[in-house]
Length: 182
Ligand code: 5GP
Ligand code: MG
Image (tube, rainbow, N blue to C red; front, side, top):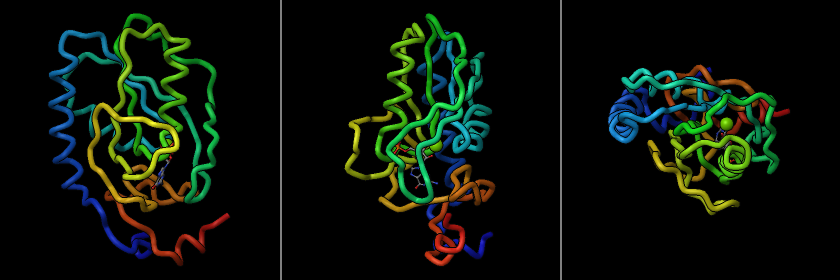
């Protein structure tokens, strides 16, 4: 698995250091508020676990299964895989996602929450913010790292469901992309 990585972009220790800062900021901002964190699966599971254990607030957690990527390209269609969503009426909601790319996913999630949830306030927190021309304008309220426009894997992020369990974030070799294409 590790032999398929061309280059490590973010080591685990660097990610965890940054999560300390993000968590501190979030903890201050949501002091005394009723907070529900909604994380977008599967990509956010490692980020969610590491970030939330650094936030000593009485928050609630929900997760939504969402997909928009196929291979190394965004499909342009955001698919919600469940109908039930947690009751967040009157609550502050923080959406966690692994990476902000075209902006379509977070836009669709915000649209749905704004239309259906009755939440008091909705914000977003992403681990990675890709420097690209967004298809849909979107600015994250909290972001861990700005990264160049490259396809990355690890720390929860996959390529056709592989590599999510790598502890760091890296760029795949072209030959690995070709080998696991479908
Ligand atoms: P957006 O809807 O903003 O284009 O894309 C967000 C979703 O696409 C992310 O939640 C993530 O699942 C996927 N994605 C975007 N860029 C990458 C990338 O570089 N690597 C991986 N593995 N997934 C990505
Ligand atoms: Mg995702």
